[in-house]
Amino acid sequence: MGLFSFTKSQLLKSLEWTDDSKNTLVYKYPMDGRQIMMGSKLTVRESQVAVFVNKGKLADVFEPGIHKLTTSNLPFLTKLLSLPFGFNSPFTSDVYFINTKQFTNIKWGTSNPITMRDKEFGTIRIRSYGTYAFKVSDPAVFLKELFGTNSTFKTEDITSYLKSMLVASISDTIAESKISALDLACNLLEFNKVAQGNVNAEFNKLGLTLTNLVIENISFPEEVEKAIDTRSSMGVMADKMDTFVKYQAAHAMRESANNPNGNNMAGMGMSLGAGAAMGNILNKSLEVVDSAKKQCPDCGTQLKQSAKFCPECGHKFASTAKKHCIFCNAEINAKAKFCPECGKNQNVTRVCKHCNTENTGKGKFCANCGEKL
Image (cartoon, rainbow, N blue to C red; front, side, top):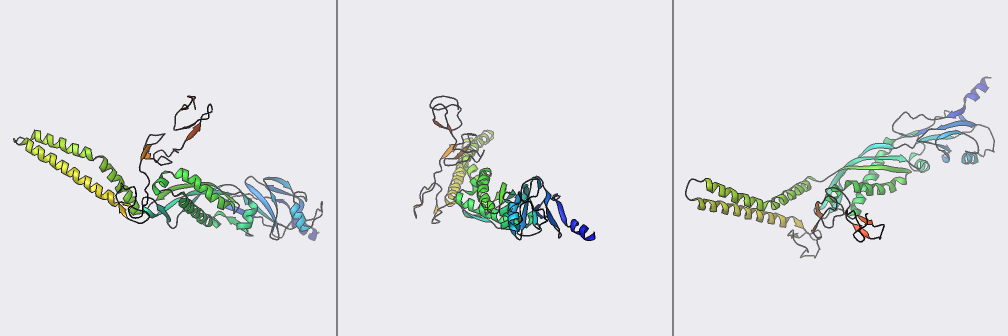
């Protein structure tokens, strides 16, 4: 009787896993020397998959639901164990529950700066950080590639590896896009989508899917940030130079009118001359700074900002022509694909359903037939 009770206690009639953690990817059901009966009940909850493994070989996979184990729904394991159809004997197998829910808000960042070649600043190094989310999409591939035969597997066991893959893919995406650093910083949403597609190709090889990628910030070296600030300041000063000279002239006329001495015209002339001289000095200073800040990316020759070709190597510089955003009317580079102000795509093309004419811009009516778009 004692032997019968012992044998009966070693049989598993029900298998299930209640996940009470937030970071467990794989849970190995503790067999503790017990065996599974044909006819036992297997409960697989939502966001779970159960995998049977025999002697290191992956056998059968069960989706969410309640399953009664028989030779009909354990075809691969039955074949491995050479069990005849309908045989109701206990058998030995390892059972793994894989968590297929989405793991979110996982932090990532560049431990080392990403080197990129920029059209305006040359070779620079940038840093970036953000969050990402992933889930197990192919349990069989995941078990073979990453998990092995551990008893448990948590997100902490894989996030460092995934982070290195993610940063490497983002670096490749930046290099392939050949986008400037400023355009990259202004179009993070569009770049996110491109980078996510490239990263997903690597994640899929591990049985994973990158469900979301967020690049929260891209930071530049201190010297590049100073150059950007200086360029902005110079642009403001150049635009306001005429206003400055006019202000000096008006100020001189007011001072001359309030001067009790009789030599008003002489004093006004001196003030006007000083204002004009100051304007000329600032204009020349801007020209010097402007001419010194442009460098040929091929041979390094210092050129004026207005130069279209390098006199040393013949490098052709991109046109600095301007256009206006078709959505917010902000002034942008003529070749810009996205507006740095509103971030919208400038290459919008709509086809008229009436005459099949392609219409660009944000007009509400077809330019050919006048039908509403």
